[in-house]
Length: 137
Image 1 (cartoon, one colour):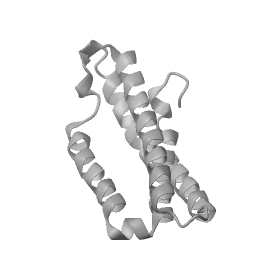
Image 2: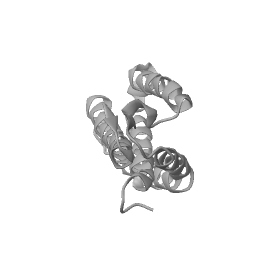
Image 3: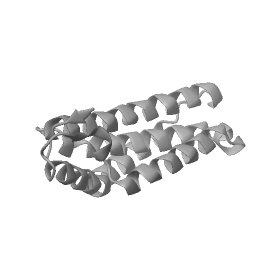
Image 4: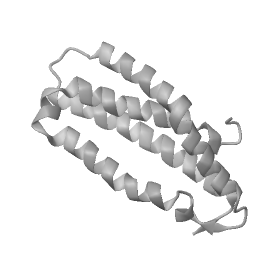
């Protein structure tokens, strides 16, 4: 399916927000399964602060580069051209690392940390998705 510039930009932002929500839910479900009963507020607060800062100061730069890449090709393009090849190659590695974190014995014993990592990455993606939308900056 070919999309115009606005469609590709909205799709890219929607993908980032969807992944952010998926990670938050995945981390929460992991904590519900393996957590010790006490909610890890300090871990979650730290994850929100660090993830939000990383999203604002680091990952937003990548989002702007991707938004610029989309704007440089205003005509209809295939949806898979949204992200550069390097990012498409790194995504399976990130998924594999997340899977390992959840399924390893360490991850089961540190459910609060797993929740914090997932929530932090989700916060970073949520904050950094702004350049993809017309109201973003």
